[in-house]
Length: 423
Image (tube, rainbow, N blue to C red; front, side):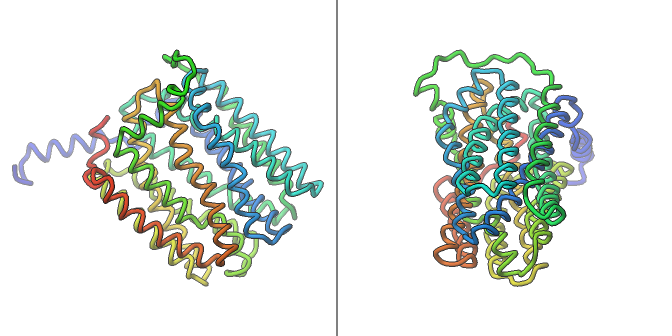
């Protein structure tokens, strides 16, 4: 069939008309959920900036910054299987609400510790319970979210999920840096984070949870491990998750931004907020573009090349001594990372049966969310041993090596085509 064939032109025109960039947002409960996520993530990002700045001001230690990630990842890993099982057996809305309320209490506790100049160990204690809350929140909220829209809107929802998260991480760090500068301390920022979480709680309450067939299997090692077994048997999903995990683990420089801001780029808390937000600005722009463009037809190659690019810009960031260049590299890293996030989320949700959504989301949480925290610890440790520049540049090189390894071990990822074909 030639490119001028009228039937082909009609088919392409029909496909263009069918593509609705706002498909998922046309559902009321999904809109409420998304607004709530923006508020929750905004508060979380504000809190992250405040914790990093306060800890480095009080200790001057890169290892102390790395400990922020470690304190949160330990409970997330330890509770992964239990949290996934709870998400598949209990009312997902109730589990989500309880987890959000625990986040509120943790933020208020951080405010008290900050105001009273309490021991550093108390900060890590609050972060530990924050990790507990997130361990249960991620699988329950993810499983709940996909019931708010039809399967046909999954790909579009994955894009808007990324967009909402990146919007929050653009606003949050900037507000966090501004809050520290305006209030003179991190205390007020923790209070604002608690208020944002409470607003998210109120919006989730308004969602009409649909009746779903929850798992009736009694708790056992087999049922707890069902999510991990499912991921292991689906090699393309495993490859995508592994690739994203190691890219974040090795290539993330976010945990070291307070050091780069203060000691290398010689800027203050306001500029730190901009650095924290730059990654998300790039990711937000890319997520919006992906929502409006037709679905990717060669998702596998796009995934692999985007992660290679992520490694390259990470290396340039590590070597940069110019504030504007550092901002640009962080923005590009966010744009490239956004491609990976959308592909992975779509694959996982389309190929996962409903009765396993909580457990698979829990496994995904460990691979991805926990890799952020472990990546922070790894960056802090290597920075303490070898310096921040070597830590970041080495991580970027490691990311590129991981891409080559994943492409060789799971060749199917190179052949992954259009994601919408699996819907």
